[in-house]
Image 1 (cartoon, rainbow, N blue to C red):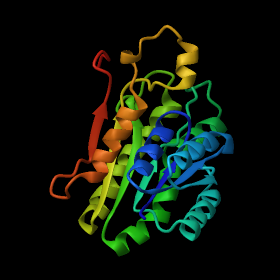
Image 2: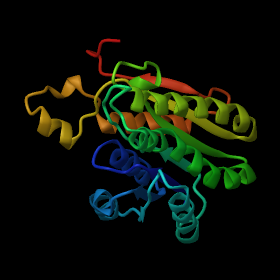
Image 3: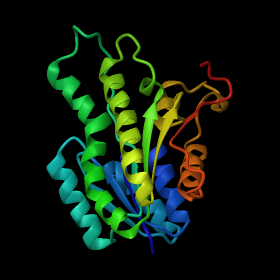
Length: 235
């Protein structure tokens, strides 16, 4: 069995990605800060006959990330696929944000991916194959007013993807950055906007299908970056 690790598992996109890879026979490491975010996803995968390992992980803490991947390697094996889907959002002006909150957002949106990449890349290099998929956002490309805490980290994540792809692509590792340009259809969003039509939001399952397609690409035609949005989204 091959192993996929998803860091940033919740009831929306993270769950859909984990479920998509589990459906293809992958053993899946479910990594998130809160165990209650992981439990329903694990139960659904196991109900379908798959294997899911819950691994509480704080993406902003390099020691937590190291310990988490030690457990993944010990119980499942080295991941062939790694998806970074963690993030943090704090809206506020430059003069309103505290340094601590700004740093926390940067660590969740960018540095955590660096910490995790250092854990999965050595085995991928040794195997001569692997896939690293990084979840970006509209803020990966545009720093809007009062969105600096998100945009700085997402800009950095995009840069990390480019540097990683150029360094490790020739060694057989596919790195791709996905710009999610719109709001994802999650239970929280539906609760906040109960009358919103589904076609105006990104379907988590549709995004997860794109992640699977990225992993399945032939190495003669790899995608480094793509953007996804509903047909009605302005851009």
